[in-house]
Image 1 (spheres, rainbow, N blue to C red):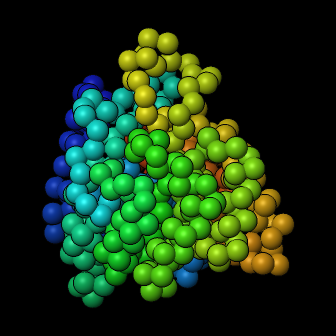
Image 2 (image 1 turned 180 degrees about the vertical axis):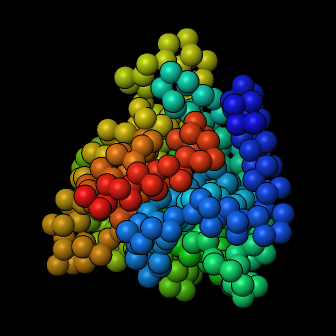
Length: 352
């Protein structure tokens, strides 16, 4: 089945994969069985961060489960946490299709989805129904982050109110919330990474979260000085963490043919070509936070994403200062047993 999906257009394959995940979640007891077989169980993998206990450091990055439809099964497949979204305050269809492409020679993906989702309120309602003990009082809870973005139709001057509306909707069901200002697929969104615009946004969102941890997700395409400025801002605000990084607009160093790259067109590139820059941004954030250690920089949680494909990649990010790691593209190429393989390999490396 997995190999058959790879022969389909990328978005069609994704939709079918999500349908299978939802179907598995509808089978009583199946998620619990999968969790016992595939879930992270080795004590060496456990992580305590942001006041939360993660069974393992490997999480599902935002973008795969945009509408919070597959959380229990994704958690059961071996992800220590699942970040859903990006969700927006208003439902929106996203960009015209086709908008998702594989670059097979690079094991990469190009997407220009445009935050297609059913809206923050719909995602929150699904999480209320599926989260386990917060609703039912039974079974282990999957740690869930909710990634929020700006509704495309909302003018930039109203962006803060739009983010606040999403944050207010998801705060009661989220273990942490991520402000996404780094997708390249919503016009003007990355401009919000400028510190003078980012600071009031983060302050306003935090004010409605009632203590739910708040993180910001940044782009790999930022200049180093801008990375430093965001690290300084995060420390000064007492932000809980930073996710480094989102997808890139760069097309440098690709193995895929120019024709294949041109056919994919514009959008964010994810996968192994992102590895080196994402690692560099992570290291810079950790170094900058260390310089601010007296102001609380040592408490800043860094979640590494971008080009993590192997257990060595994950271990390298943890050694470089990440507390947790996330993946999406490698799961698409590696299949449903990929998280289990990464957890097993990572456990071996953490014991060395």
